[in-house]
Length: 188
Image 1 (cartoon, rainbow, N blue to C red):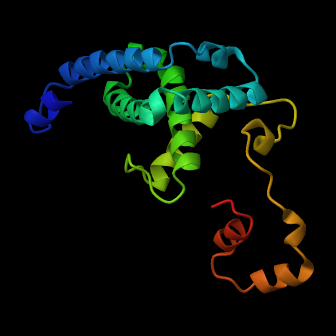
Image 2: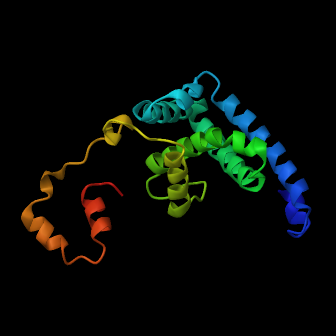
Image 3: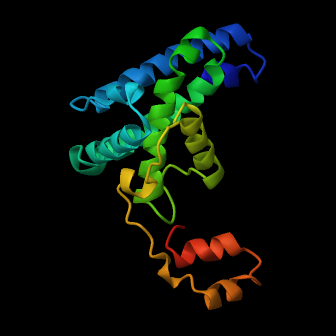
């Protein structure tokens, strides 16, 4: 990446792509090392409910590393991986590793979303977080049965009993209905 920026964005794209593939592979090795002791590879052959469970288990595993240092190292490594992957696409090696990249991005998104509700130290914005979640979904998170995502992700189910007719009538005039509803249900 520094090669590309040093060239003022005018470097040879093939060389930039090859350099990005090297960095991507290095970051995948770093992440595999961080995950040493947890078999995340089962993620790639699991059904939807099991994939969500594995993401939750991965988050728990990372949070248990070195009194919180694992989380910081993991987030940094995934950020670097994402940047190098973006430059490496459509290189065959990058495409071959796309599911692995999506898995790490999904775990990072979960770590950032559920462990730092107001701001995150990695500077990830909501749109980037949404993009990463969508990438994960696009990686064939398809199921033939109904999956309770709250249960699969280990999240407490919101109490929807507060959604009375009177409350819904009051919400009708809100400009940002979804945000207000999400806050009432503690989803945002």
